[in-house]
Length: 139
Image (tube, rainbow, N blue to C red):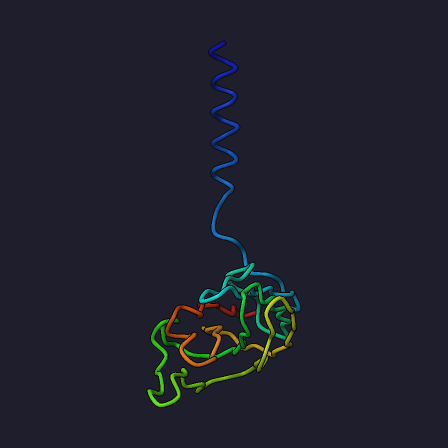
């Protein structure tokens, strides 16, 4: 009985020990971003530099947009233009201007190593939480 319990704990330790931070997706891999009303999630936290196809699903109940911005700023710290209620798009390297509710679209972006932020930049959506950080690693 003791041996069976010990074997179970060793097996569990091996499984838990192998669960580290997710590895970057290889160059040319597809990233999937899902837009909900006031939230963006991605299937991987980073990719290797190069040509990256980003598939975007709008799971929300309203139209959203999708911008890829290269920046060292934190995802929630992009400057916002008070008049338009939109984030400034300095460093933008790709975008999908409009994705209707329930629809999907894709954009392919040549991404250099560094930090990025994916946002929806329809008025006030960025400020309401539609942003997520993303990292591109050297190949």
